Length: 199
Image 1: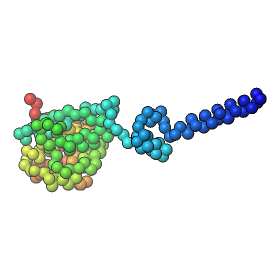
Image 2: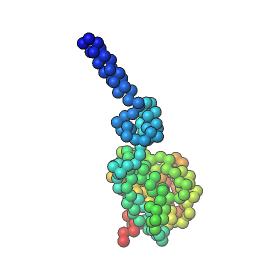
Image 3: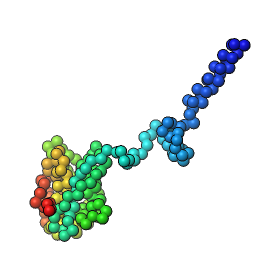
Image 4: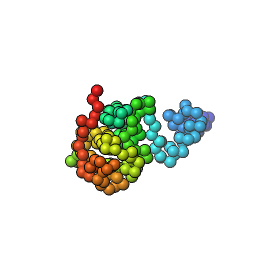
């Protein structure tokens, strides 16, 4: 009799452990979530794929400085912006510059509409090569001052980083002499503090 009880208890224990190990596909993190979320997450977990990164309140951020045109189109004005902390911070910063000033800001964008950052490479000697799409030239509004604002918004934004001393602007992977016909950008350029509005 005692042997039968032990065998029954062992069988129940095995069944209980089997049920626990299957777990219905739920992890501790998903057990309390609605069914719709569980169904979306379970296949990714089964396939071993990472979930898509999402910005959360606790995500690490870094403060960067972007330079846009003042409302008169005469000077550059610094705008501080918090962006997610990523490995390629220089690339992320230039992409923020391309997006333009913050919503509601009186500042004006300096990068022509449609421009795309194609590549960026920072050499150990501090030279940053930044490659833009053809729209940087084709969609530029022109003017010597407008060209200077475009060029130095890029140069000054990148030289905020200690690893960047000079900036070389390329278009479609090629060196260009100028963006709008007034400023020579065929060689590497250094930071220009004089074009920044200080008051």
